Length: 329
Image (cartoon, rainbow, N blue to C red; front, side):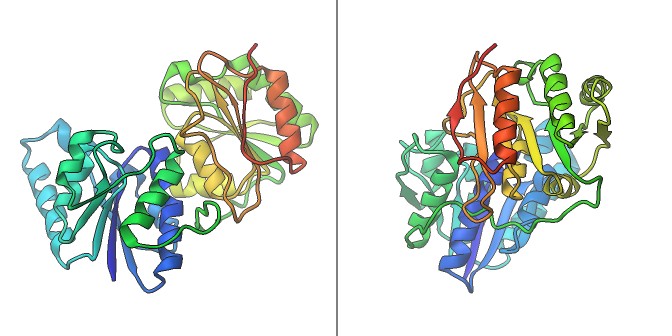
């Protein structure tokens, strides 16, 4: 049996698809599972041993040069790759018109959300089989239920990300502080990061601040300069970042895909929400790792430094399942 999942972006959404792959592998252990994903996130499906072939696409780049010869060559190569052999099921868990079009390029019956369940209702017109999944569920559960409905099995237990956990040989007793996000409104104030970092230092943890862009590195450097022993990690691939996070005793991050990646590799995670709500897309602990995860704050209610420090201490002590707690200030 050959199966194809289509979940292209963004980083957090791709990570939320991992438990559905674990479910499918358990229910259909002899199936071959391929995954279509945006090229920048291709490292994530590759972390899951149940994924046989990662098929990258470049929709974001193609849109910038739709008439370029390279664009049409790459689209043709993608179509040839997904039509080479038929799939028993092609499952689009993105629920967008762009992902439905990618699924339509593959050879095999196409499954997706019905009109009331899809993020873009028009996408449902391109599926052969449509499935109703409550839009009020967490994204991980929506992905899992769609795959189960498409492939005909019952879900068992909580979400299992299923990824191998590489560890970085870095300084002992590290805490990763994920200070960057896609929107300035999602950022947690720098003075609060500094207060947190100093508190973690008192607990014997070295603060490590991953940063990619020049602006992110400048911000991380300002924060690290005020925390004894802190360091800014150099830009690296998602696979390398997974290794770095997996080697940390604690990860604290804003609403960004890397925070979800920390949960996927089984680390205690504290997610800070300043301009979004964690209800449907908040960080979720894996059922197998046993590592706790918590969500703090919400839209217009960034958590206070004291609340974050208390929650961090609780996580380091092994405290509690994923929850949503507000704490402004």
